[in-house]
Length: 81
Image (tube, rainbow, N blue to C red; front, side, top):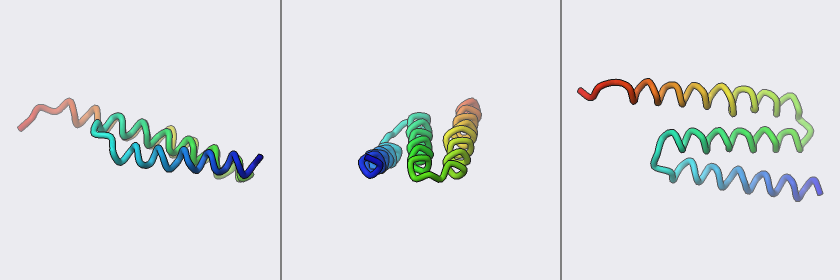
């Protein structure tokens, strides 16, 4: 059962990585990248590395996504030169 869960999470990680590379909208790419980090955190938790999973969830899925979205919004608010 644990192997099936690991394979499923790895498949979701690969699909979200491909989705982040192929999507045209930058905000959508950031959201898909956040989903990749979330699946990565779940994968680490399934492996039993709860400390690594918690760090990945906090840094990868939350803080990095927030920074990217904030940066894209700030860049989008500038007038074109």
